[in-house]
Image (cartoon, rainbow, N blue to C red; front, top):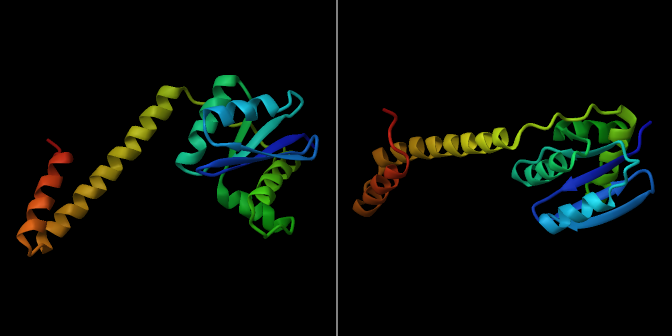
Length: 166
């Protein structure tokens, strides 16, 4: 089994557990917290494991990639199934971090291949574009149903933000 750090990522904090030294740490999920996590992470640790958690994990992933650290980004469903398999159904940040470290150690997870930052930026823009298209579609539907003059005007103004495809 390899040593691993499990990192439970949330909007405000990163809760980390290092299996090598059996220790928990909590860091703010900002630039200073990411730097402190990297400094705390031992060179002896084979992998840092975290769940793909939408926007909250992206900066952690970028930071680890820039520093050349090995990490494994796992599907939250896979992590949940692993937790159930080892009898850890309780959900706290500390338990999740420990479970992710144990998962990384037991399964000897393959490192996630870091993509260039421009690819991550383009993916973020694509997600943003898809959201705007969904909003445009919803606005069209609401416009058909709007009976109030003010609601109708607001919906028409909002459609200017997402132009029709040409």
